[in-house]
Length: 313
Image 1 (cartoon, rainbow, N blue to C red):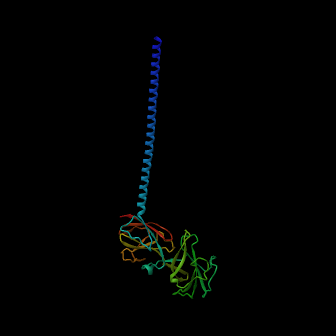
Image 2 (cartoon, rainbow, N blue to C red):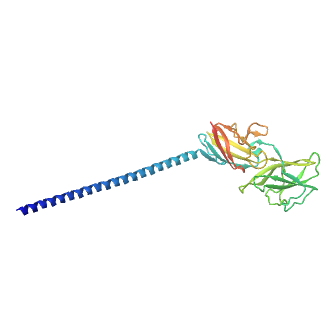
Image 3 (cartoon, one colour):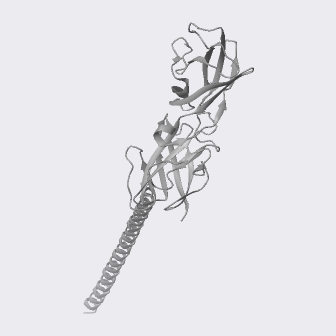
């Protein structure tokens, strides 16, 4: 009996230890599962945070893009053939300008400002490779420098007809296409020399026109009047505004400080301006328009693209 009691007691001890081991293992398992669940939740939280941040960044990016689009919408591009109407004034206008070779006839602008030619000589320039058959005894070669290209010389020759103290008539040959051949370049009307091919740094050319004349013989004096300009049209606040840029120093570069802008100030659809009138302004001075004060902030040398920016209301 004593042995049976010992065996039973030992069995109870073993059973108790087994239960303790099972309970401990179960607790460890539950604790481990809890830890794994916590880690998973933490990972999910981090992932959601990352997604939320990326979404927020995407919204910020969209907002930035919207701001850029709103800012860009304030810049209006305008072509003179197709002015873009608008109900109000914008902060900035980009105006595409075109060439006119008759500023007086087309726009009513009588702009007489004489410019002397770059040089006059009795020696034929090396660049000239062909000459016309002259009719008279005295010839003089002239040089114009037009455009901002490095090689911007326009060569011509004047064949004088018995000049006296009152009149200085001559036949004019001008190398308008800059190929060195004067034999094919007789100018029928030197009071309106059109089609002069002016070179620019960007590799392009634009037409230019002048009135070329002689004002003295001893010494020989030759001058020219600019007949070309750049014009544009834009519409704002239901008003149609015309503008004309005049090459005031006669070098075929339209963005110099001394160049002049003429606007249709009285809104009658006609430009009003002359060298004696007060309706013109230096190119970069503030322009008081009905929608505010604007200023030319950018303009290229050939005179094709102008940016008008609002200075203040």
